[in-house]
Length: 198
Ligand code: UP5
Ligand code: MG
Image (cartoon, rainbow, N blue to C red):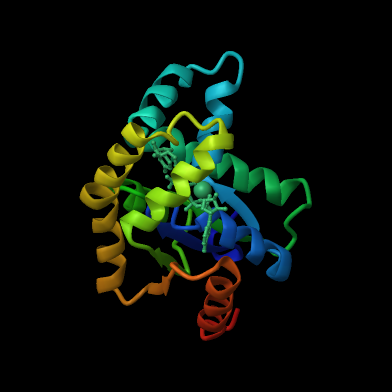
């Protein structure tokens, strides 16, 4: 596909900020295809014969970032598939939880396409921690435990916030406070993206 026929919005925010929850809402009302980088990595980790299984497993448990080549390729494949199988005739994508390191951001916008803007869900750590520990009771995610959560927070502050700051300087960030109930956060999201003609 060519970069000018697709619309990409990056959806960023700390672990447990509510990226996946809000993307699900946006899919229903706007016909986006939702691609969560974390979900794609978890699927690749479990794919029999994957050469990256162990690496991904290790990174996720430790809240570390998987080398960008792996993630960019998974995203590009998923975009191509959604376009080719006809599930996404509008070629509109929400890329959730990516880019979370500067090298990924530059690479993706160079080799795949630039993002229209960045939705950034801002949530205090104590609230994210509460949500993740609650979800951890049933999620089965290897990183929903207090040790992994602390590591994820650290990676977010040290490595991923600089990406948000980079886009902020370019005037491409739509910041949404993510502490209220999901429906309230969604209303705020709708109001903000309206300004971009979406
Ligand atoms: N919840 C949601 N919104 C709420 C609200 N407003 N009020 C109260 N509760 C709310 O929500 C989390 C929980 O909170 C849920 O139980 C939800 O019901 C509740 P969710 O919508 O799932 O939040 P989200 O921000 O999507 O949280 P997630 O845990 O998915 O965030 P992460 O960014 O940590 O996870 P991700 O899957 O993106 O990445 C996992 C790992 O993969 C990374 O740590 C990293 O190791 C690896 N990775 C890479 O290496 N590279 C990448 O590019 C991407 C990921
Ligand atoms: Mg998520």
